[in-house]
Image 1 (cartoon, rainbow, N blue to C red):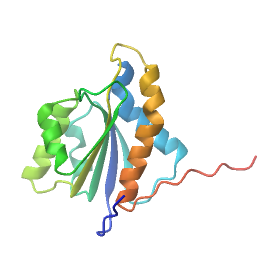
Image 2: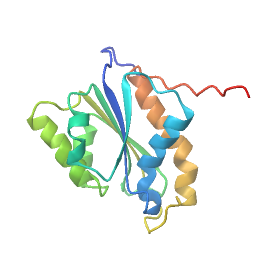
Image 3: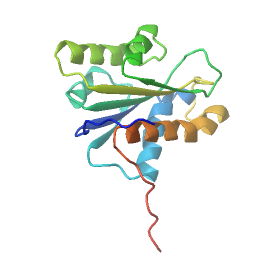
Amino acid sequence: MRTIDTPIRRAVLLGVGNILLTDEGVGVRLVEQLQAEYEIPDALTVLDGGTAAMELLEDLENLDLLVIADCVRVGKPPASVVVLKDDEVPAFFRARISPHQVGLSDVLATLEITERAPRHVVVVGVQPFDISTSMEQSAPVRAAMPTALQAIRDALAEYGLHTPPKVAEAA
């Protein structure tokens, strides 16, 4: 794992997805789990973006790092975890492999045009198994959650943002 030399002063972990559509809400579920189980460094803001798009513009301006957790369709087996970084991300958005990408693509394009784009962008995605109407994740995606969560933690750590497990308080 490489470590970035430039300090990260302002970062956002953005979970996107529709939790009403089985595996489509995996990004939101991942950021919820990270917040529940791990310490969040001061430089990191965790956002549940749901299915929002341009409403997030102000929150994503001038970041040192943007990590996006989402459901992605990349032609891999269900529950595959995919990590894309920096130059790989624009190609990801051209392929439109998530329903949120139109909105996120517009947001990132607007940030580029206004010269307020994040310095670094990482996408951690999970290939869905099922996107029918249900608030329950499919078994394959539920089983991939620890791997996806670790991929998020690894991406953050690569930029100096460590997320140690929360210490349980004694009763």
